[in-house]
Length: 46
Image (tube, rainbow, N blue to C red; front, side, top):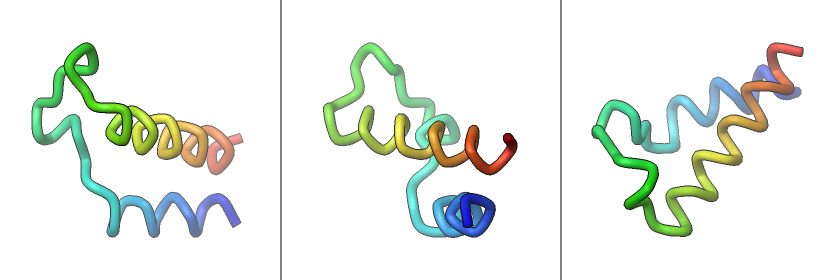
């Protein structure tokens, strides 16, 4: 299930690292997306 979510996230959610986003200047919603993607990726790998 998490592998599917990881692929879906890659397609639908923006990649902030490609945009050069500085984490210290990120908005709350951007931090939430980053945290969600990290959680799903960790679960998909483990």
